[in-house]
Image 1 (tube, rainbow, N blue to C red):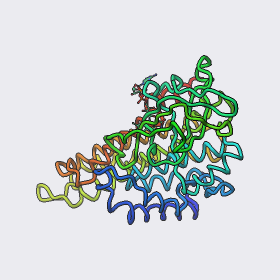
Image 2: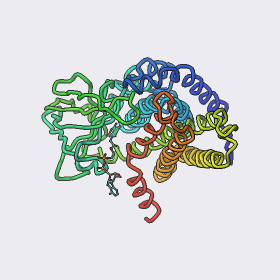
Image 3: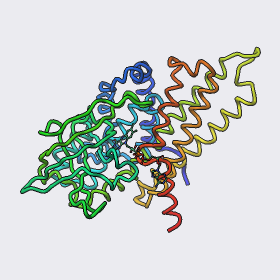
Image 4: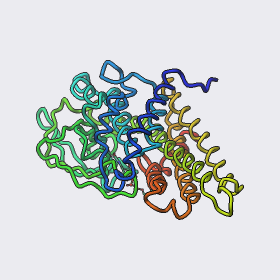
Length: 379
Ligand SMILES: Cc1cc2nc3c(=O)[nH]c(=O)nc-3n(C[C@H](O)[C@H](O)[C@H](O)COP(=O)(O)OP(=O)(O)OC[C@H]3O[C@@H](n4cnc5c(N)ncnc54)[C@H](O)[C@@H]3O)c2cc1C
């Protein structure tokens, strides 16, 4: 067993860390406050190869392993979890899906542009009445000659406003339930396709989230991904990989909470000594460090299993549940260590607590992850 990162992985970690600290850090509080989408930074992340990390170089990507992706995503999210989620959706939910399930026509037309970061993608599964129970979707895709006509409403789509292409799930045969769901790639600007207003969120505020509206949108049959009825399988398989990304995002938030706690507790003087000299504070910091180390091992193991082409589904769920809970706990303790200052916007640490919460909700809540893990263990 070898825990040593390769030279290439160390270089990716260093590059992501330097980029995050020098470029992302300066305006992160303002972007969060004003809900400014990090467009120029996404362009720079594309130049660094961070938007299609695991995609084959045949399709414009970097052909890197999942561990490299998790390391880069942790470093980006350590500074700006909003930039982290934009990166994560494009890499794991869009590029990976297209590479695995898309036809050569779709890969040539869309994947090249998405993996280089020239264009940005979104993944649209959820609907107002279909969250955890995604199979309860109402959006329909009716086959007509050589195209499908799509009608319905999708909600909470990350990158919904700023994306160019959307991976969309819709019912082609309602009576078949989840076996009647199909997957498509849709372009912004097509007739009948409208985009809603940005949601006003608790955290990851500088990433955009919105509703998407489809009114008889004509989608060529060549834009069907996989075959009719394969959509639910495609969604679940893609989300398995996506959960490693969200776990890495949570890990970045947890690590940032630890870093800030160490630094503040050493400089803040109360009762004539630094906070860090109190055992009660040391214990909080020790617990954070222990849990972050364990979470990182889980994330890397899930990523390694995926790279070995072994079944990694329950490990990805374990990594997501654990890392997101560690992020929530560490960021809450970080605010506590910062006292009243931690409660103030300018401290930057209350943002960590707000950003951490979403990692327990999207791409399958912690409850649903436990269902996945339970099923896998008990079968
Ligand atoms: C900021 C943000 C970004 C998002 N981005 C995207 C995106 O890009 N694309 C996309 O498709 N979706 C996206 N989502 C949707 C997200 O995936 C869903 O919110 C999530 O799957 C949960 O669904 P829900 O919110 O409808 O909660 P519900 O399914 O209504 O669940 C409510 C609560 O009940 C619990 N629960 C539900 N069923 C069970 C059960 N069987 N057993 C035990 N507990 C249960 C849940 O865990 C949760 O705590 C996003 C959501 C947010 C908030």
